Length: 196
Image 1: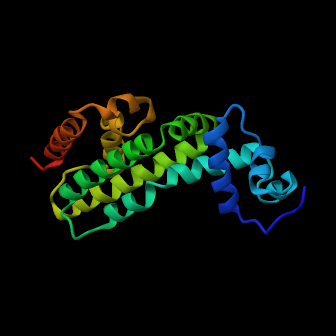
Image 2 (image 1 turned 90 degrees about the vertical axis):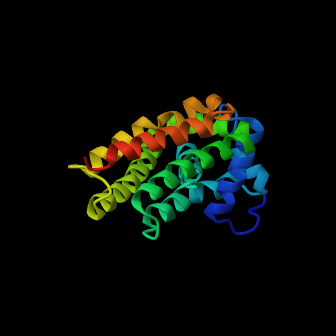
């Protein structure tokens, strides 16, 4: 097979997503990715030393798609901490639900990949909890929230809203009252964080 044009990691990851969409995680191979790119499988291995490394990189890329908008919300000090927390939680839900509705086959594939590469999922969760910690710590500083340990509180908020971001709950995300229910949970959490 010809070596084809010079490759970069992003091109390979995009092609891998297409291959995963067509074949699913059980059948997709590095050779399929190389064929889709018109290159030898050795060209792919120059960027990713193994099939596992390639699959992990794809999982990390997918998980990272929601990160930038959420990081922007977490650091946006123009919003009061209570509204920032509500915006962050609803933005996370909207991002996860959009990934599901726009490409359900690929969403199902990524559920498999993140289960295979638990360190990618763990790093993603740690990132998200850090966003929440920043918001809660800002709320403590401003006097809007009371928390002796913003990190532990962030974990609790994350766990309390798991039904709105964990893929295991994806079937529930399309129910007509999902957004209303999340809004009610946000209000309850924010009220619970206010100083007494």
